[in-house]
Image 1 (cartoon, rainbow over the protein chains, first blue to last red):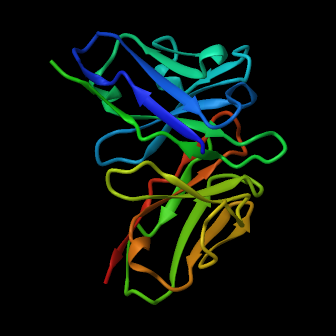
Image 2 (image 1 turned 45 degrees about the horizontal axis):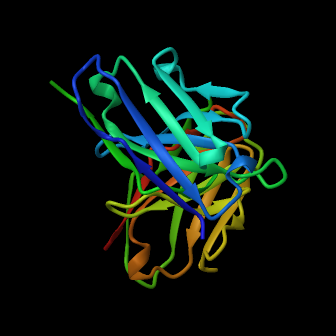
Length: 121
Length: 108
């Protein structure tokens, strides 16, 4: 069974930093692109960043470029999101999500339960 | 950026009836369109990909259609567990994925 479990969320002051983690199991983690998707309270979904299977390619939504860094450790089956210079508008539930394959592109076929990040003084 | 627009924002339908949700892309996304269902306090769940292919375990009452810029999600006979928020998402402009703003399907 595919499982994605996020952790690391919490309350942080504006300008602060936080590192999110996502533990993957039930599939060959190193074979998939992985993404972070966020959802502000009462709002819709926003893709944040993704990373290639070997970590050699990374992409970000414009609003987080230069502040967030996505990374992965295939030996630990884990995905990370380092968030620096946090702003109030970064407040959201952050989801880890698995992307479909090149052969069968699907969007995001599995999601974690999410971790809440609150940026407030 | 490809903008995805869903309509209506809220749809009120009675159990057992048909629901039709729409999604429009600001430019062609071919068939690279997915639909998700999200219930309160839960993560989104993939329903449809490739505009019309049901994901694993999704009941046959869910169907998707369309290509290019106009897409539809149809739920043929609403069950109580289907009342939720539905999002469309394009993945044609990879990796700049974009979602629609959502349609809330509520009980009439």
